[in-house]
Image 1 (cartoon, chains in turn brown, blue):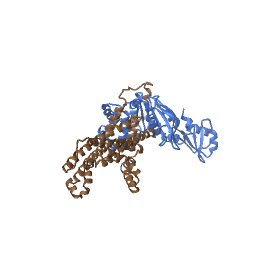
Image 2 (cartoon, helix red, strand yellow):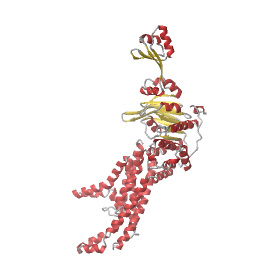
Image 3 (cartoon, one colour):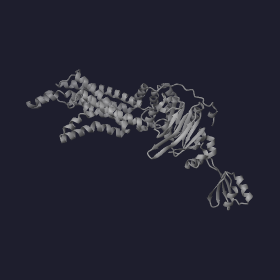
Amino acid sequence: MSTATASTPGATHPHTSLGRLSFPGVVRSEWIKLRTLRSTFWTLISAVVLVVGIASLVAFAIPDKSTLVDRVSAAQRVAVEAQAASFATTAATAGLTFASLVIAVLGVLVISGEFSTGMIRSSFTAVPRRFPVFAAKTLVLFLVAFIVGLISSAASWAVAVPILTSKGYPGDLFSAGTLWAIVGAGAYLGLVAVFALGVGAILKSTAGGIAGALGVLLVLPIIANLVSGLTRTQWVADAGHYLISNAGSGMSGIANGTLEPWANAVTVLIWAAVAFVAGAVLLQRRDA
Amino acid sequence: MIRLDHLTKRFGAKTAVDDISVTIQPGKVTGFLGPNGAGKSTTMRMIMGLDRPTHGSALINGKRYAEFRSPLTEVGALLDAKAVHTGRSAYAHLLALAATHRIPKARVHEVIGMTGLESVASKRVGGFSLGMGQRLGIAAAMLGDPATLILDEPVNGLDPEGVLWVRQFARHLAGQGRTVFLSSHLMSEMAQTADHIVVLGRGRVIADAPVDQILAGATRHAVRVRTPQPEQLARAVAGADVAVTGVEAQLLEVTGLTAPQIGEAAAREGIVLHELTPLSASLEEAYLELTQDDVEYRTEVSR
């Protein structure tokens, strides 16, 4: 029973220097964590399917321009022509709202899954300063959501524009506007993921996190629309443009009030940054 | 070496850990004993920086855990077997933890072999038994080949073979000069594994002594005496180290004297005895007594 006490007191074990904690290492760890969960795979696949699938559906559903124009009276023709000019954008970005919801769920899960399973304690044992874990999660998640958003958005344009040009609508896959819309959609999905990650870190629970993130993304714009429509208050309508989902639509090429493209991007960035900072501060302060 | 200095943790009005000052020495297995809810896990979580102490400090080799530049190679901890994402495989879990410190893959395979997880390493942790989870937790703790090990209830859920393995493993690690600090709520388990025992009850240190001293001090040797003349007998055996307690009208318990000594004292006074039974409390009973009333035994066994 007391073999250990017989050993030389103060003897140290053969301590091999096995490794050292570093931020690139933490980023690698977070990448391993993300790619070794099935939920990641399924959410990303469904995001791509939603963006490309809905874009194709909408593009197919829009009737030929000649049919459309023939149906309306001469007086209305100008208005229809103006609308028809943006059909390519409408179709290509139609799935983005749904994809943003799926990406938001992934963002919440990345952190809430660690809290619900207790994994967070293993993570914080390996990286006791905690912030590097959150920063690495944010970086990896942003990049993954951005790249998936970029690919699926490019694919949705690539599908929608040829279909619609064959129906007589204007559309240019390689115009600066289209390219910016694709990059904007990717960046928006990346920032939505970061926003949701922050919400997940604040609320710690999967159910609460998803409810919170989807509430902001989905419910707030509806409420803003209802209130401004029913009460005809202009300031509510104006404020609605600064909601993350509306500004995100603005980033991906859809007109969002009178907001400039950069204003849309900054608005989304602020939403993501606020959630990130609040999440980081709370992770640091609370017991794990 | 782990040094706890006036360590205190309050959750609202409840004090989970109450002003603990203990030093855990390297080269020994130190058992951390106490009933459920005594504050063992909270203490260990504070050492690992997962819970913030309300007051006091917990230092490992003179540093707070978060101050280490390479924490996993300094301290390995199994705080609870469930600190794993259930959707990930055991291998992926260990790989992700190892990546933070750039610990090579070969070491991941090594700890999997060390803990006997080869056959289930690629399976998702959600389907693991408690025992498998414990092994995975120990594998994670060993990733960095740390000089200090903190294991919270490591034998919980293990089969007898697993219990034996943990016991030998802990002894082996301490034999290499490492600091091994493991908790349990089972006295018998600790008696077989630990060199030194710290007993915690209701958040306070009740005892902090080498294991043999704890056993000697805590194991109660009483003698049950049945006699129609209890008052006379109490007077006959009275002495500095002798305690007599009445159980029933004619039934006494005497501690501090052996049965022959009591019998002889009774014979000298001509006291009639109907029963004279030596009682020896089991380890578990002694431990229960130790933790039931932390004040009474505090001075007896603490240093």
